[in-house]
Image (cartoon, rainbow, N blue to C red; front, side, top):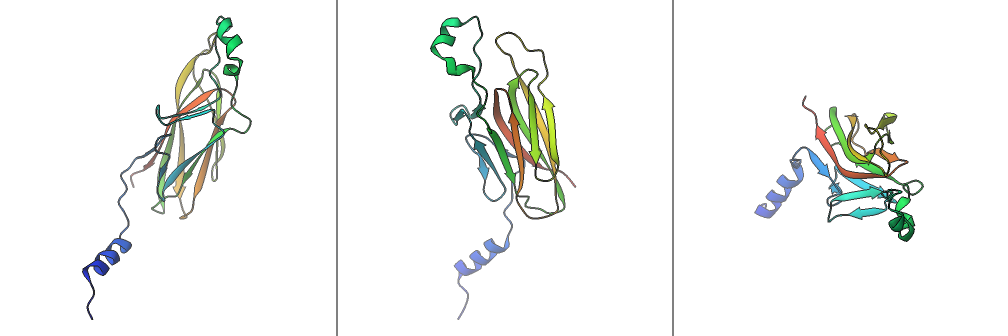
Length: 175
């Protein structure tokens, strides 16, 4: 009895590692790439796929806007306790280097904390001078991963002040 064309195609498909288009860009709209990367949003104030953003904390209103502050007192809140973002990365190729870049917006002079399963903890401060009523600035927070095992690695990003995540980009570095 011979092998059917379907069995040959299935065998070929199962024996072939799928091609990945690098870089992989994760956002609020597309928070995963099957089997390779995923974002977990822990206690965000707003997870908005329409604007493709995750917001932690509520943007503070300027003190000069007393009427709005009286009607919307919750708009002055920092992120919830324990609010953070976790990026899970499972490298498809071993003994390779990967770059992870978080693109965020935060309040000027606020500090971000990046923890990881392999590298420990790093801090990064948003540049600029804060202004009354609050000023935002964009920030890129890099991380690196050296894949020695085919397992899930995690990176946790948080800040005590208001912040937004625009994207997390995972790149395979050249050999």
